Amino acid sequence: MSDPTSLTIAAARKSLGKGEISALELTDAYLAAMERARILNAYVAETPEQARAMAKESDRRLAAGSARRLEGIPLGIKDLFATRGVHTQACSHVLDKFKPTYDSTVTANLFKDGAVMLGKLNMDEFAMGSSNETSYYGKVINPWRRKGSNAALVPGGSSGGSATAVAAQLCAGATATDTGGSIRQPAAFTGTVGIKPTYGRCSRWGIVAFASSLDQAGPLARDVRDAAIMLRSMASHDPLDTTSVDLPVPDYEAALTGDIRGLRIGIPREYRMEGMPADIDALWQKGADWLKARGAEIVDVSLPHTKYALPAYYIVAPAEASSNLARYDGVRYGLRVEGDDVISMYENTRAAGFGTEVKRRIMIGTYVLSAGYYDAYYVKAQKVRTLIKRDFDEAWGKVDVILTPATPSAAFAPGEITDPVQMYLNDIFTVTVNMAGLPGIAVPAGLDSGGLPLALQLIAKPFDEPTLFRAAHVLEDCAGFSAKPDKWW
Amino acid sequence: MPVDSKMVRRIARLARIKVSEEDVPRLEGELNAILKWIEMLDEVDTSNAEPLTSMVRMQMKMREDVVTAGQDPDAVMANAPTKDDSFYVVPKVVE
Image (cartoon, rainbow over all chains, first blue to last red; front, side, top):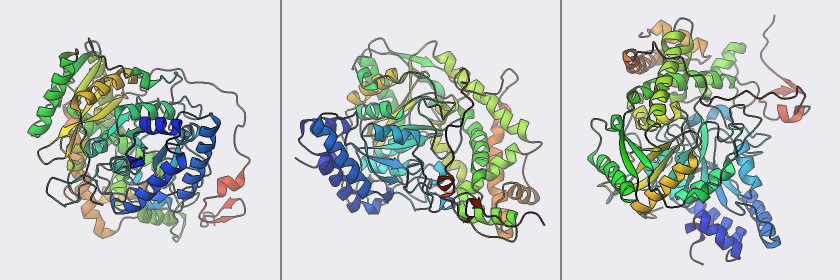
């Protein structure tokens, strides 16, 4: 067999089922690829012993004819997910040496379905960032490079390790999380597929909390089918997360019919931003033309509060983060830096443990929640959020799915964006979806003039992931995106 | 509403993050740049909007009031940076 790491999850599932390859051979191929690709810094912890033990168990099950849905499929796990006895630090120094005594619901679901864990993936610290430059474990390098250039590019963030690992074939698929675009933006920067499901579809239990009303887990995968396969296993109703929804999990793969005749696709005029690169505008038009050619109806829609989503997000998310991150106090887990009294111990621990961006967001959050400012900032932002959701609710009267660009640019260089607000603007097309709790998917759709991947985003109604996957699958088929990064590492 | 250096120190204290004097001007500038950008929201008429409190309308679930986890102090204490038996150790808080 040729390189086993080139198999999609669907293809690996078939090969494993037929006995053309063993789960252990597949896992070993990934472990070797990970070792060769350490320069990309995608993994912060490799777990070869556990991976091989899990793969051997998968081989036993495959031989016994009792294979589960993801039997023997090697996955990378974002460092935000609690994994029993294994490095779980949200890539922060404040969680120094933390090894949970339990598994997150999402990873437990994946392991229950037979998936193999290869290791923990790098990310922006506490998922706060759009370039994977804020990790305590150093930046992640995008496997893609501009045509004719050796200069490093960022993989996007916060799930930058997940995106790089999938794009560089260092895992068959990866878990990720998305609070403002942290699955879809890195997917767009690396030519991979990433879906943020509806808020409540995946349990948040055991995922290090950033902004609880926005955080959702989802997969990063090589294609739409693989994302559909992974999400089916990740999603569940969980009594341990009261916001997880008690709805059956559909067979998303069954939704990939290739038929979108009569589907109404909305094009929101407010997403045509000033200064948007011509490549992205052209790709967006192309996407609409492709879907139309496959029998969909293209409808102009208006989402008037689009431009207010990002500033409102930068009130809501830091506010919730300042509350969630109050638990890192040097007492129960993680780093502790002593002081003269208990307060100085807290202050020293948090000063040493949190990075610059995390501190900045905690301080913004603390300020907007402080006495006298709460109504002007937090309540106002939550009202704006209602208006954003209302915009979408009105659009759903006319369309089934909305098509937008995924990001305002292709991947950029490390250190290129130093102004926080400029960095935040990366999420301008993705953050509305989190604010309204909707499902959104980024699908690679073409290359820019420099040979870097660009993606389009599709958005659907709450819990209508089946329609979202169906439309994404057709979009993927039309785009025929098959480019891969040169293997320079 | 811009923040001044006094407010930066106050926020840092509330957030329990030690901030050195030389970092105050930088933080003041960064926080003000973000807060100024957020002021864009003043343009939005929110008089007809309630604050969003949940994504999906659903009934909160009730469960039996029984212990479902716990009784495992070793697991709870496993990651404590300093401990004494089954107790967390903190600097003296009461004289």
